[in-house]
Every structure is written in structure tokens, then in C-alpha cells.
Length: 425
Ligand code: URA
Figure (spheres, rainbow, N blue to C red):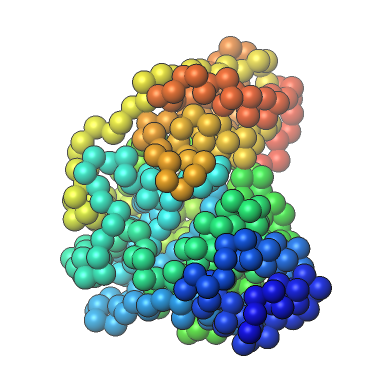
């Protein structure tokens, strides 16, 4: 087998054989296929796609590139959720302890933000002392004691995806349905969860910009999960505008704690509850009541135990950025547009995200929203507060928001978007 013939086959719109796929994934993981060769293959796949047979084999090869975890010693059913990535998407933070409070075990292997989308681990690291890196036995201990754990995937889990995802990020090959589906599902299947709910984001702040593409991605992932014996469903959810009122690490932790305390923005609460119900159904716990667990403090209790178990101090003050800058409404009327991608890019430029994998992030940086599309706003009223430790970046963050915050006439009839568009599976 040689890599050039595999690249040529996909470049010329051919179907890759099972042997070609197994070989190229194995050889890339071992370092026998060079990054530039894998880049060419990823771009050929990005441009020419893969059919479902190829995607299934590609996913299986990525699973087989590493270890599989085993949660069979747990007495509770396991349930996991994965989001395809968005702006202000802090849902994992309240969701994992909430679902644990309802009786499931939630092994949440999460990632870091790259580009304009935030990462769950970066958010939690804003909590003083909190540790993302756990060994497999430590992870099992937290799961057993608390019921939920949010941590980084160990190096042994789907190492082919680790290399390939980092490569895709710097070669313009992220937004590809076959590559996203296989990347997410290889990790989730190798993780060994019994059930999985996918939160497939749709809109400017998501990788999938329209419903048709999101449907195709969701259906592909649901089929992959089901074929591997994981009960898998997907919700297509809105990402045209940021989720909640914050985008940025410590800012999002603060908002998540508000949700766990029984408050928080309506869209964050609604989506957390919708995903919790899906997870509990898939885990065989359809009678559990997540709204009650939010209201009676049991979800908050699980959150505190989960943070403590990973070295964090749930009572410590969260970091605050050194500088704040307020953006005000230019006119009186209805806020009709607040673009998710623009807010994500602004938060990233303020220091909440990283340009390269090894860059540090600022815990306090980000964007706070004071109004959401559909709200009435008065000229001069604060609309956004930008937070940063590097004020020299403010002009670039403001540039990202240019023309993306739109105030229409006061009599505008605003047709909002639903939090959940569709369910698949
Ligand atoms: N999340 C992943 O884990 N992989 C992708 O390709 C996109 C989002």
C-alpha cells in the first residue's frame, strides 16, 4: 500500500477501499504517513466527500487506533452528550451534574476551544484548582463517587483523531461532514458510553451553516453510533445567535452556576433540560425529572462535588479581566441581529480562545450580552461588555462586531428562532 495512490483515488472522486482506509489511518497514527500527505488526503475528502460505507470504515479505523474504555463496572447506566461546537455553548457544565443527579453516570470527555468556538475544558479551568487531566482509574473513581465527570480524553483514546483534528484545524478542512462525523463518533464509541445525545448546532456560529447540512451530519452520526451498539439520538439546535448571555471562559462558568442555582437565561435552561430529557430517555430513565433536580438544588450539589473531586474550589471567586469596554445601542428599536460568529470571533480576539493549540487562554476574557435578538433597546443603552486582559486587542474585537449588531425600527415584528429545531434518531 502507498499513500500517494490513496490520495489519488480520493482526488479523482473514487471510493476508498476498506484496506486503504485501515492502512492510511494506522500508518498516519504511527508517523509513517507525513502530515503533508494526510493534509492532501483530508482536502480531497473535504472536496469530494465519502459515502456512508467509507465513513463507517474510517470511523472504525480511528477507534481501533487506540484503546477502548470500559464502564461496565458501574451500576448506573451511562449517558453522554456531545456538541458539534458553538458560541456561548456552556451546556455541558450544568448538564453533566444535572443528569447525574437524576440517576445516570455521565462520562463527559471534553475538548478545548479552537478558533471561534469555546471549549469546555478551558471554561472549567477558570475555576481555581480544577484539573482536566485525569488517569482512567481517577476518572472511574469520580464517576462512581459523584455520577459525573468532565475531563480531557487520555492520550490512548482515538489517537488518530487527535493528530488528524489538529491537522484539519490548520489546513482548512474542519467543516466536512465525513470528517466531523468520524472525529466525534470515534471518540464517543471508544469512550464506551451506553447512550449518546448529539447536539448538532446550526447557524453562523456553527460548523454547519444550514439545516440540510446539519441533518446530514446528524443522520450520519446517529447511524454510526447505532451500528456500534450505542443508543444515539441528535437534536438540531440553533446557533445563529450566541447561547445565553456570555461567551468566554469564567463568564460562562458564572452563567452555568446561575442555571444550577435555578436561574440563568431562558435559552440555556431550555436547552439544558431538553438535552437532559433526551439523555435520561436514552439511558432508560424516562421518569426522572431534571426540572425538579434543578429546582431542588440536587444538580447544584452534584456540581459542587464534581468540581471538588477534580481539585477545584466551587466557592472561589472567578477570575475577572482587567479591562471592560461597553458597546451601546446606536438607535432605539428592536435588536434584530446579534451574530453568533461575530460574537465568537470577538471573544476569541479578546483572548478567550487560542490561535494555536499550545497558546494559553485568558480566563476572564469574553463578551457579555445585555440584550438578545427580539428585545427592545433604547439608544445609548449598553448592549455588550467586552472583557480582556489585553486592551490593545479591543479594536480587533470591535471590528469583528461591525455591522453584526443590528437595531431595527421599534415596530419590527421579530420572528425568533427555536432553541431546538429538530430531533433525529
Ligand atoms: N468536534 C470534534 O470533536 N471533531 C470535529 O471534527 C468537529 C467538532
